[in-house]
Image 1 (spheres, helix red, strand yellow):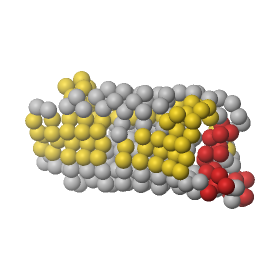
Image 2: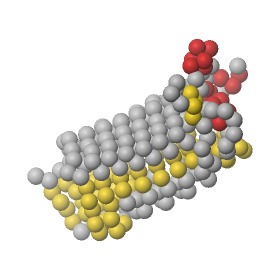
Image 3: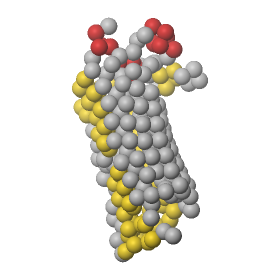
Image 4: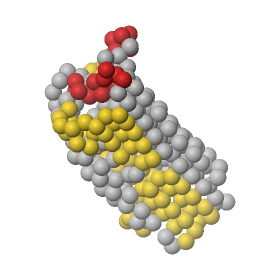
Length: 239
């Protein structure tokens, strides 16, 4: 089919579960095992959903054998919605969403750039897990939480700025981001950094601008290049 030959696409209007299933197929994902057997896999690399509203309806967008995934809310990238869309390189998310749900964009192994609107307040568990090529991402200013394993194994990520509204960075959130060298925490009252949140990264620079900082003793474990933290009030040197 001609749609499976499209490499760039901008979509407008309302999308339900069936529409998402089509986009998954076009981007190298699948709806169920029948897609794989029939070779219904496209080559879509660029997907712009900025003018889209995600709505309930349709049957399901993915069946992994244990569960059929359906749209559960118009304000979110739902659970595993774009999981495994291995051909996607650039993704622009809808402007009205507030949540990227569990594994919503995980295992998109060729995804380099994603645009997240400022309306997003929560990035869920494993939302971008194993997006190994992800390099260009700006976290939205209204973001309040980053879930566990959210960016686990995003090996191409080099730097990240944590917005000031965030109070919690979940366990393993940036674990094994092996090329992550710089993290800047924007000014806020407090931050809680979870277990292994930045462990096994390439961190050499951390800038903290909080009045109160709590982090697990293993939050920065195995960061062999990390020698000091830069606070708004001075340095903390690691011995």
